[in-house]
Length: 595
Image (cartoon, rainbow, N blue to C red; front, side, top):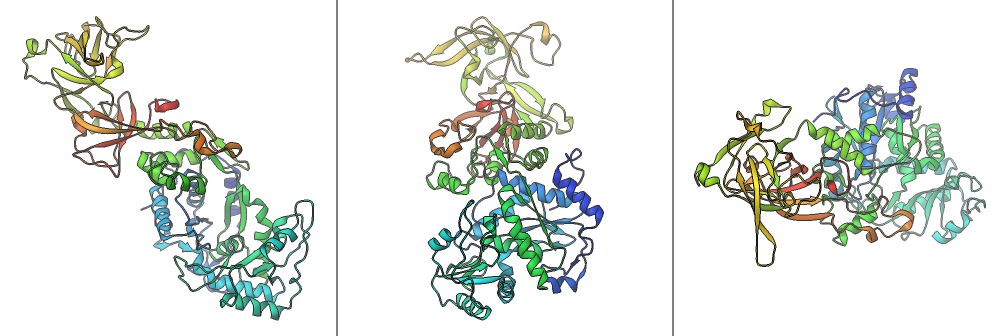
């Protein structure tokens, strides 16, 4: 699998990250760095070759959940910039928290990044990495910091550490353990490593400045004791590095040039720089070190992206799993029918800024329609069926006659050919295509009015039939002779309305899932609101309908435009050729309700 081509879209919109990288590449900021062929320390890379990649970026998910639409922004930004500047983007699992991480999530993340169309393979080399594979170096680096008087083991309780940290107006207070000797700290840290102390009994902290105005520089924790089985390293370790310590090291070992993250990490940048500078000073890492750059998070209306809240939706069975088509997970969006091209276009079009932004969900649907308009084959479907009986059919053609009809599979793509179906004495129409008493501006079926059955004939409505409860069970009409579409004189009878239909004799029964937005409010959890309070009760409706015979044997995960209704996809899990299931992706126009 290959990444999207460099010129597969219109010229890329300018943004501050693109401008920064372009300038640094031109200035050769990272041109002197060397690459040892694999991630490694300074000596490893010094023995290698000049780095063949102009830039190295990374997408570093923690494997503790499924990727969602917010992650797609970061994925496309990092992989896209690497592609455009002749570099590579690494896929790296930031797996330093064993309690929450599972192989299931690792596999799902790999699958979704590939689904979006990106690859971490360049010139036959895979750049898929795990932070946990660097644990040995991280430990060695921690001992080096201790030896340099830059780290110490703190035995305060978590409550005492929190209290002594101070706040934005009060400087922190030095730990009573801060003045331990190097030898004492090394001994204590090795005891932590060897399992001599209980979970939470002590931590390793950097020794920076407890009075710093940046609270993140007030001796942040580097290691904690945590007995937990790790998906990659098993039970080898009972101490684990903190994310803020591990992440800069991972970047440096992998020769990352631009470490791009979201704005909430901006206050962590001084520690990022401090740590890498100290380790480079001690000869463990090569220079120049990676630099962190922050961009604003993309927020999409009508969704939530908190992993905790998404997990609640799954655990409480509000949705049917992580890949429920209403979920903003990439797995859910794929099952709903969104295309990777549409997701990439939305990510590209929204650019990168230094502020968090909100984007209306409709922007994603616009990108999808633009993508599918030229791709998706057309078909007719009836999703709220009402029978239309053509009462003079037998007199005109004979009761057993079926009139062949055809239509282009795609109006702008003649190479896709024609789809075939036929008209008979009974057809299915949409229930709302008939009104006993027509409102103003209603041009479809009502007694005395003529309409065209699309690709078929003109019919004139004569009335309807009802059951004992007064519910309409059938509409009656007569065929107007010599009005078949495409035949001489077919336009002699003028009508204002055209309706879609499916023949009763050759229509294919199908289950149709009408998905809509999961929430009724643009920001479901705004102001601390319980998102459950604004769930949309109509976010999923399952109906029985009929589709034209050209869809009788289509495979799963195939997209269509149902004329009049919108874009649909055969469900990748539930669809079978003998029992088709179609999911509504979006309507043909912007607007609430997928309509």
